[in-house]
Length: 219
Length: 266
Image 1 (cartoon, rainbow over the protein chains, first blue to last red):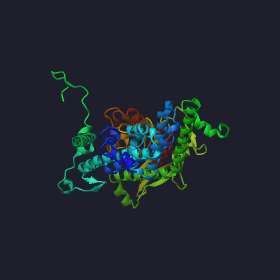
Image 2 (cartoon, rainbow over the protein chains, first blue to last red):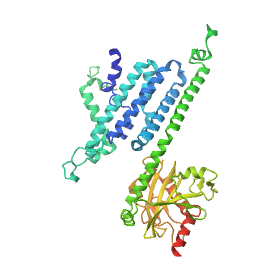
Image 3 (cartoon, chains in turn purple, cyan):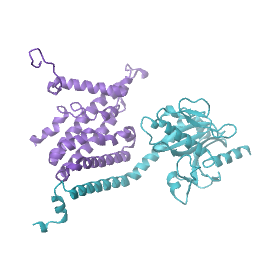
Image 4 (cartoon, helix red, strand yellow):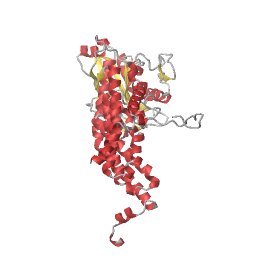
């Protein structure tokens, strides 16, 4: 079990799908204006990613190579539709606020990426752990970004007032920018910077290097 | 050994490059997906319908709140909600029957309670229309203060449902509320926004000769019959225009509004 647990813990920070692989950015921008939508989206992705990894891993030996992507997408799309239907039945108000972004989980690169890159070649157990780890890594970024955006943008968290607003006689003036899409880019960018400063091995090697006069690559 | 295995095991044992296996796996996955999706949709449909109905009622309530002074009028008149009536759309007569919650689209689909619209009349693109519609009235001291007419029409990619509230002159818009739509998020879906719907109060449906002129225009409105369009959502705007023109015309609430106006004069 200890041997397997790195599948779960690695994607949380070290190889986080959002901050290292820059995947799933579209929905990370769209659903992070409020913490409630970010949590719902994270839960939806956890379900879809784990279930698709389990199913695809279970039938991986019988998936013909030529049609594997179509089969993976079909399975993922089915799970996404089920999730969307369940949300519309049991969490109607929040599903209205998430609008199309639950449906767009189908095109979230993390899901297909883990199916194609991991679940196709590994047994069910590790596949589920890997899926859960990646989904939690994505959820972690979403929750951090949404917390910052909702708190600084509206002075609330989960709709509960946290900071006293100036219009009610307090000292906090909401930063409207935080409710707009660019702020998510700024926050994710700062997070990537912070992580790569702490872990320099994540910084990409430059593609081209200038030769120094001695004909050796500069360090 | 090979003879003892069932057809299932023989199928699974085929190499993955085999066309039978490829087609078979595609079919099996598609079948599983179809069964899962249809089962979920069928099981959850009643709950979702309840949610949509509650949302519709909430929007109706929101429209009442948004109409200037309506809340006070209602309090004065001692009513907490609008009165609903059944109207025969063909004759324009109000029916005495009790109003139950009903889904106009389902009623329109039923051959017994709905009619097929002739293509030239069906400008709103709804295909079929119910014979009897539910409308909502607000009466004050025995006089009509507001008429609320539910309507629907084809937008760009969905059916738009709306409530139109008319002033007692049956021509001036008191409010328009979109109750349900599935237009493009960020473009056509903006018809659901309060700031767009706030453009409607005070607009006029028809000119003095009785010709229906109301229109969602591209760009900025110039006359009392025009409402600013949403850029990037021309076809949604056209859908709203067609919906209003259909339902205010002879195939929609025209006969009912005529009979109301006649009553007022008499």
